[in-house]
Picture 1 (cartoon, rainbow, N blue to C red):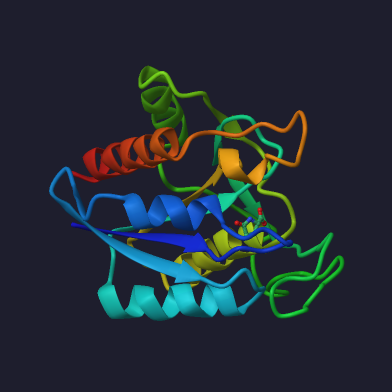
Picture 2: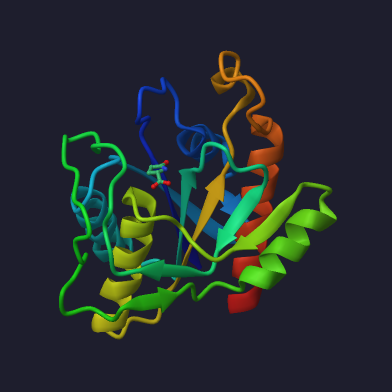
Length: 203
Ligand code: PCA
């Protein structure tokens, strides 16, 4: 079994992206499944193209994407991706789509196909705060989640997919008073736990 895990490069003036820091630290094998790691740029369309390229290359059983959600307190397991881009800030390529459908021919939304409630429960059992989130926003993270689910749906592929947003790392909030953060160790443990649940659910 193969699980493709994607993470983003830093954006919005940050020098790190916690998702990529977590990605680098994940075990290469979890519950017998091979963990394949891919960094994608924080850029509309290109992020999806890179992910699809990799999906075609490695033919994974599941795709889990991770992204930074600055300001969130816990590990948020996303329920749904919506067919809209509405960017508060330009992406890393200077693109800033406003109220633009991601795929005019795609469904309005896709639900994650990974077991979101079981993942939240398992992470909380590790004593790490986690919850289901009902919006992945309207920036690149939602775009990537939508793009991957749309590709799987249109091509009728047997691949589970989902998205997890994670908080800032402690070093990112030194100059941001009253901003939530989580340690790298806890976030790595949370994502490894999520992968375990995904792998077990497919076995
Ligand atoms: N977070 C952004 C895009 C890249 C990332 O890590 C988001 O939540 O859309």
